[in-house]
Image 1: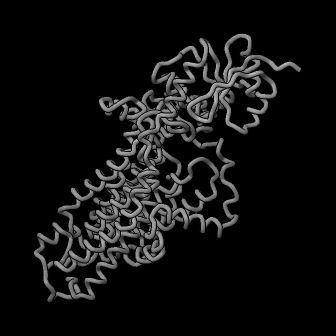
Image 2: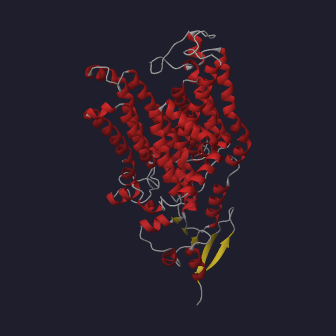
Length: 549
């Protein structure tokens, strides 16, 4: 018979197969992303990251130095597997696989049920936002990996603090200091990961209130340890600062082929790091809260199907079973959802990747509660029914159950947990599939063929990034000057028409503008143009001359 009261240091049931189960879930996530992976170059931010990673450049705000450095390493390590664009896409698939593996570990630490944790990982692998982010180069793939790792470290820290009696008054001060040391290392590791995550994406800042409350709830006495708090702060800030040095170094002395803004200057560095160009994107955060809640509910259903309907119940169960973890994740999900629902920018669905990991962990806790409740009803749970049919301690540690009945219940519920995901799998696969998407590369190559020698092309972001890739990474048309809107701002070139007027008569001039843009209307009214049909609806226009009055 196995008796392991809650809070003891014994390994949770199922630890013996946790590693292969977690790795298998990660392999499934990687496999899904790999089967639907973008084969090469992409538009928008994807194209930019496919350039700055391999050449160790600097990206748009906030610079994402942690991701850029990892992308540079991946472009070297994955060299046998394809061109630089594909390698950056492959990195996202690997990161999503790693995030899924960590989610299984997290769910097991919270519930002690390995099969429920494994099912949680499989659900995670097929959540649309997770699956999609694994199919193309994107800094959010690293973000979700680091969030999952951070949660694993924090939960591991709390477990060691609880085991050591760090939250109780039963031990002497010296005893608490001695026993808290293993927990200290876990919290220090969490601070380092937070620093890396902050250097990857400032969404990490939204996790800070929840983490602070969680640490205080788990170990109130930490406030009486100023030296340790200082060590945590130094580790976090030093990690972040060290990684952000990539921006001024690669924009200054060790100039990269592609640099966003002027981060080699103090003002330019602050402009990029604090994303000053996006400060106005937070739109009426306290307006239409009811509508935002409805929209969030629909989004949750799109991601999790019928499982989304029990998220409130799952959170209540999380409060019951893991109150401090519920405080951490509840505050983090609330703040992130509030921010994302009020932030007007590009693909905001990516901002919900961290909350997705947290919500899935709540669902795992709900599943564990149901299994244990049914086991108690059937008198199969060890502590409440010691005369039930027991398994040996070795089999409990290996398979994660206390009786054959409990094993059947857990596996059955784990399978039921997967049903909504399995039913939605074909539709999600079609939506995520980018394997036939070659249009960005085709567009860039055709544009380079069209343009005459020594040409100037006044472009906008989504298409500028593809042209940069063709020129910088592939080495095509070094004679072409690509003038993005960012280039105009950084080099004080004025409006689109100012650039055209300055170059017209000296160099061939081409224009790529977004349909409906005021700049496009001004160009068409001011100049005679020749329009070239392209692989997308976005044409490229050659400026023939000033239109007669």
